[in-house]
Every structure is written in structure tokens, then in C-alpha cells.
Amino acid sequence: MGNTTSYFKFGASSPHLQLLATQRRDQLQANNVCLSGIVCTIGPGSTNENILVEMMRAGMRIARLNFSHGSHAEHGDRIKTIRKAMELYQERYNQACPLAIALDTKGPEIRTGIIEQGERSKVELKQGSLVKLTNALEYNEKCTDKIIYINYQMLLQKIGVNQEIYIDDGKIILKCDKIENNFVEYLPVISDQDEKDLKFAVENGIDMIFASFVTSSNDIAQIRGVLGEAGKNILIISKIESAQALKDLSHIVNKSDGVMVARGDLALQVPFEQLFQLQKQIIAMCNIEGKPVICATQMLESMMDKQRPSRADVSDIGNAIFDGADCVMLSGETAVGKYPVESVQTMAKICIEAENINWTGRLFHEILTLTFSNNTPDGYCMSAVAAATFYEAAAIIVTSNISTELVKLIAKFKPRCPIIAVTKDVKFSRQIGLYRAAYSVVYEEVISEQTTVEVTEDTATTAAKKENDIKKELRCAVDYGTQRDILRGEDTVVVLRSGELHAVNAGRNMIIETATVKYL
Ligand SMILES: Nc1ncnc2c1ncn2[C@@H]1O[C@H](COP(=O)(O)OP(=O)(O)O)[C@@H](O)[C@H]1O
Ligand SMILES: C=C(OP(=O)(O)O)C(=O)O
Image (tube, rainbow, N blue to C red; front, side, top):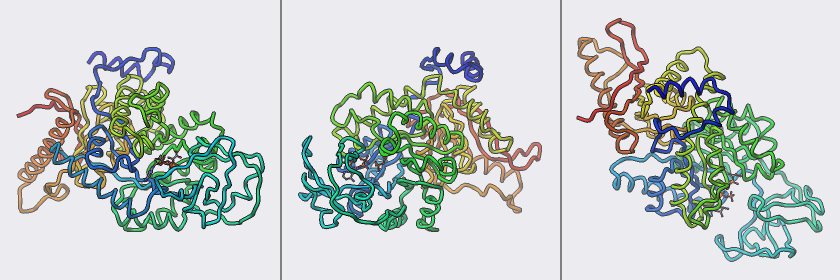
């Protein structure tokens, strides 16, 4: 306790440099569970129920399907496998593991065609050899090491002799030797293919869209329009990957449900030496706005074909968490890499370490100082997080009569212990994986009507019933927390719930209380 108080004061007032110099692993408040969300790209290397279950066990919270690759039939099958894996997890571990599915749109990306021997085949481009790029459709599925289809009709106008073209996030560089032809066509922000993919998302109950190459807040409105009424609960996460998006960044952050720092393409669109600064800036803007943010691409590239991470990758992941990212993403590492499960385990270990260093507590103070507005929701949520820090709570439990928006607001203050949100909203229970520290458990039982008092019953009986409902939800949250290794006997928890203070006849109120976990 004494230590917590000094940490609390220290975090609030110490200069940045002093905090860095005194960094230590905070043993008192160390979590075993990974607070950061891990987004995994699911591809041929991970489309297997058993592999997926182990990835979920290791910390995967969001499964990403990249619609730049594969057909609707292939992705449809993949979705079935993911859902089967969720059932298998429940059977194997006797507990639900809500996992969100994200559809990453192709967007107006410039893509190569398919190799003539089929989608999974490869060709080798030898250094110094000549290769022809064409936008003639007949080569779309007939690429070789001599001729490669490119879906960008303006290519021949935009490129000049001696200019460079980057392929695969810049791993392959081509230099233009000569130009032989001319075509004119523009790429729309939402192509016909994207529109079909967005409709596929609605039909298949996808939880979130990772919108490629968003350039302005208007693009988000367009996507919302295509998703329509039936897709109104699908979250839109804008991928920041162009110089144009950077110009409208504050509007994009404001209009999106979340943001991804899509470093692969971004590093090709801006001078690469600016990438680290842009990553920090985008993450900070999201933290201030209370929007979840994912840091993506080449985070654990060294584990594509090796079992241990490079030093650079370890630092990269840890630093993204320090920057304030809610989630970190695996791309090829889990889509086609040799070690999908080990990659998630490694990423989770690094995140836990970064989250447990006392310095990360500064985010709470900074977000509070910069954004706290004197309104009731901010007051409750901030107080719950402050109480959890002060009492070294092992979790913040939120009952289902607190709105999902408030759960997000608690996550905005970046608590250092997990939030366990009890909910009846199954989609929300999956989507919550986007927010650092947020976990959820679905409580199916219908609890007594919370807002109206039945005239036939006396008030005391109704109140007792409601109290009983709340107790059942808390039991459910404690069981969940115990099974996930979040809670142990004698741990302190902070509970945020809605209720009535009958003694003072004060009407409905948000109640924050602390409790000790006891097993009966
Ligand atoms: N559905 C898929 N089918 C085949 N390969 C895939 C699939 N999804 C991802 N991959 C592979 O994983 C690599 C990294 O994934 P990602 O970063 O999502 O792709 P990209 O950078 O091509 O958009 C891709 O280049 C591709 O080789
Ligand atoms: C995540 C990214 O997008 P994609 O993998 O679709 O190119 C990126 O460019 O970093």
C-alpha cells in the first residue's frame, strides 16, 4: 500500500526523464494476463482449429482476414474454422473466449497479379534482371518472372525512367528502365470489390472493418453508407497508410471507431526515417481522443521462420506499448509464418513486461490532465481507474447495467489492471478486445428490470431481487477472472455498477465500491 501511494504521487508529478531513470518492474501490481490486444492475420499457416485455439490461449483477441488475398469462398471457410475454434476453446477450457473477426479491405492498393502456376506459387526475381510491369488484364493470373500484372492503370503515367517501385512493403525494389505504353484510369476509394467485401462483412457477422487507405473522414462515411443499417454495429478502424491521410488525421481519428498505424504502406508513402515519430503522434492523438489504436506490420518479422525474436522486434513491440497502443498486430508471422502460436506467445510476453513497468502508469495521469471534462461519465470512469490504482486492485468489474460506452471510457483511462465487463451483448464482448485492458464475460441470464419498480411488489422485495441479480453477475465475473488467472482469493477488486441508494432516496446512481475476492 505504502508503495502504491508513492507510485501514484510519483507518476503524477515526476519529470519524464526521472520516470525513465527509475523504471522498474512493478511487482506489486504485476499482471499475468496480457492487457494489450493481439491482432493476428489468419492465412494458410493458421487456418486450423487447434492452432487457432492455442493462439487464442496465448492472447489473440482479434482474427484479421486480409481481403487483398483469397476469394470469398476461402474467407467464408476461414470464418467457419475460426468459429469452430471458439467452440472448441469453450469445450477444452470450459470457458468462452470472445474473439472478434476483422475484415481488412483491399482498398485502392496497388497489387500484383497471380503467378501463372497458381495463387500459392512463387517466382524468383534475380537481381539485375529485367521484368515488365503491365496493366493488361490478360496477365492478371499469368504473372511470371518476366512479366507482372499491376492493378494500377495510372502506373505508366505516374512513373518516370529511373524512378523506383517498391513491392512487398519495400522488400523488392524495381527501377524503371523504359516506358512503352499509356493507359488512363483512376482508382476509386471504395472499389466495386471493396463494396462486395463490405456486404460480405455484413452477411457474415464480421465485427470490425480495417479500412485500407482511408484518406479523409468522408471515406469513413462512405463505408458506413455501404454497411448500412444491418451493419451499423460493425466498427470501422481506419488504416493510416498514406501521406494524404496524415493531412486529415484529426478528423479521421474523430470519425473512426479506432485507428491502425499501418506501417507497411505508410513507410513507403513518407520518408521512412519519419515513421517512428508518426507512430507516436498517431497513437497519442488516439489516446487523447479515447479511440483504440493498433500498431501494425513487421512487429515480429524475425519469427517468420525462427523460434526466437530479434532484439529489434522485442524493442519494437515494447515501445509500441509504451507509446500507448491498445493492440499490436501480427501479419505474415501468423498468416504464413512457421511459428504462429509461438509468435503470439512471444508477443504477449513482451506486452506483459511493458505493461508491468511502473512507467506505463503515466498514461493515466496524462490522459486525465489533457482530457478530463467535468461531466459525470468521465468522473465515474476516472474514479474507478484511480481507485483501482490506489488499492492495487486485481481487476475492475463492471456490471451489465453500465453502458458499453462507459466500459470504453474506463479503458480510455488505461487502467493497469484488467477490466472485466459483464455484458449481454455478444458482439460487444468480441469487439472489446480492441481496447487495452478490457475483457468481457457474457452473462446470459435475464436479470430483473432495473429501471422500473413494480407496483405490485413492495420496494424492499424489488431491491432485494436486484441486489441478488448484481451478486450473480459479480459471481460470474469472479469465476471468469479466476479461470483466466486474473483473480485470486483475497485480491481487491473495484466494482462499478448502477443501482439505487434507498437509504437516502437518491434515485439511480453509479456506485463504485471495493471488495475482496472470497471463495465460498
Ligand atoms: N488469405 C491469405 N492467403 C494467402 N496468403 C496470405 C493471406 N493473408 C496473408 N497472407 C500472406 O501473409 C503476408 C503478410 O500478410 P499481410 O501483411 O496481411 O499482407 P500484405 O502486406 O500483402 O497486405 C502476405 O504478403 C501474404 O503472403
Ligand atoms: C497493415 C497494412 O496493410 P496491408 O497489410 O493490407 O498492406 C500495412 O500497410 O501496414
